[in-house]
Length: 367
Image 1 (tube, rainbow, N blue to C red):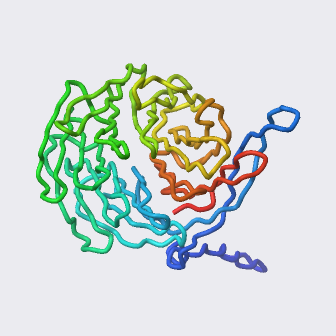
Image 2: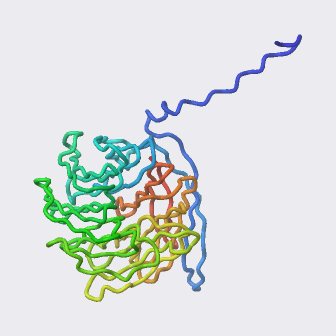
Image 3: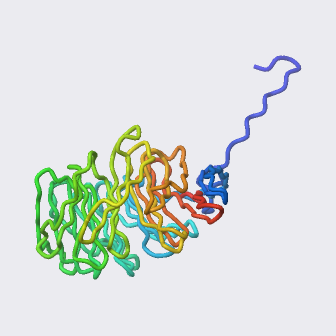
């Protein structure tokens, strides 16, 4: 009821519908802060903070993104808790195609080199093969594990697929026929990731038993086991020349939480460690040599941070905090200057590495 002489209170202005903005592709602009270090001519190392605007596009997934991988210089492929695999043009912010077939969360994705084909692994204990220009139905179906599939890697010639699971086993498949040709199991070897070494018949594997194993695909036998680490090994990545690899460690409060560089050649020694994260390191990548004057690697962590490191000295060159994104789950190289980072709470982030007095890492888009 209104009192005599009083005026009705105007209704607060309504916010524009998010769906309307999503239909237009771009949702909104926001700000992000990044820090990077550089060496002055007098030898003093300075740290600078940079504030940049970035674009937020309609999301690729409706839930947590578990994994992202680069299909080519324009497209990435991702999977998540929404059970879908999505091909996304990260340069335009548009979904190219959605693939549905898994009954549970997608855990891993592996792309076929110089091809439009890729594989996805899932908690439904299966692996599926997809074709970007084919049907939305899987081209091939691989079923043989007893538990969630946590590793998938395709051979350099695309003829074989290696899969790993929490059931302690690795399976080797003929891609053309979809038949399992080799099976191996190691007690307590709960697989966390698989990576096929370029130009080699070897598959690199990390495990919850804190070890990194190198498997020979010719008979699927363990060719080498690296010294046991103190924490669960969550991820591994091989360099493009096949000479080195990085493994990532779980941890909390700065204990563990490192990445380790290993020699894959005859000595197979530990080369360097990258310490500075405060929670589990979930992913790591070798960055293109054209990016910097020195070899560099990048890591992403559950502490919401992405870091760039000098590969040979272990010095941290740049840190980007993706606040509000939750644990960062996966990292992939988009092109010579771009990184793709999957997160628990805010989808996929497009990061850019810029040259300045040092290497500046900043977020330019999210989808």
